[in-house]
Length: 116
Image 1 (tube, helix red, strand yellow):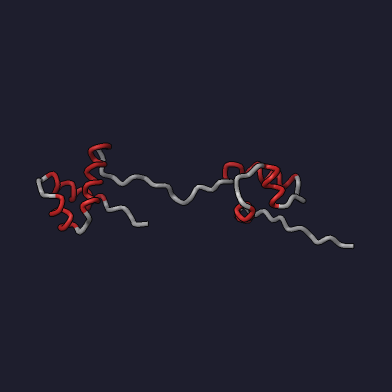
Image 2 (tube, rainbow, N blue to C red):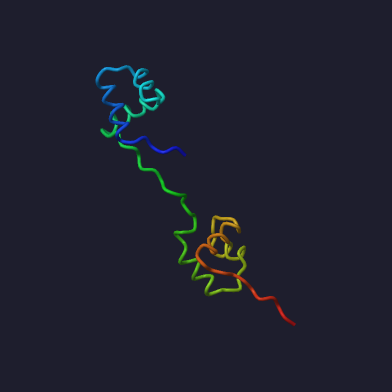
């Protein structure tokens, strides 16, 4: 993903457009596409600002909201398999996603082998 243009560049682009330069001339001067300029002017028209929009940082993790519930269930029923845990809590994720989340939280579901 590309980084947003600096505020300095944005201000210079808008200033040149406001001074009467054509979009094509401004695009060539600053080596940007016409679309960048149109979007910038549109954003200013709609919001009154030319600042970049604040995007999401990272990805949303499906299990973070239910972390405490999952940990409590694992602590209460340590013999549950990952599939059983998914079924019991009706989690909308795959076994590998649950495994990665538990690992990230520092929870281990290691079971000792049955001994005769």
